[in-house]
Length: 294
Image (cartoon, rainbow, N blue to C red; front, side):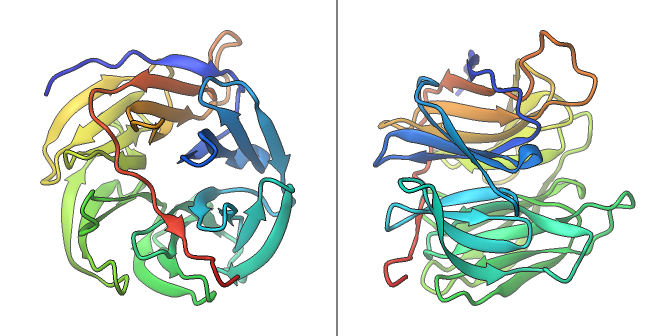
């Protein structure tokens, strides 16, 4: 299917690094983080009703929880945050707290009810010392994939059988067979390699037709790949650095995309804003963290 997307800026926040947009179907709102400003944001789908919280330990990625709380990845820990009271309810796990040059990055709740979150190497030499982890509600930290520079691009297929995962500095996208009962992954396969010109793979989402949508942060594009790795569509984005797409709304056909604000960008640029476009294809519904006993 060939189509164009018309993006409009719904929140001109000038975020340093807006990331991890998540649609909450119960509240009919969007949550997202600004990693650079250590903030978590909430807004209605129109951009109104905006509120934000800041954290000493940062805000790197989020997921929804069964209780209505959010599972929040901070620099080196995973916590439960209650957006109704504005308080951290519980620390769930500590990850790579002893490693100075890494921090948590992209995270999402999987079909297994666990929070999947990766780390990234922040030092100038960008070495493959980061990993992807699985964190269930009991706080167990299971290392699933190593040898990563910047873990990113987590998303699952509509039937829960495939996990997509990327390394933004690899720069590659892989797919794994996924067992939703155990969280086991197997049969790793290199899906695509996308360079600076094509758009290094940042955050991602999947649609119900099996496509994988990857924010091409280095090229100002949103890339759409088939489940077999064919680049089927490339959509130009209004600002140079999109970071992650998210399907939202009751029909999951409003595509929200976060962005970052590069140093030296013009004062009239809306880079760092939150953009939205209508899509003819619905996205895969996100899962909720199983915190019912916490």
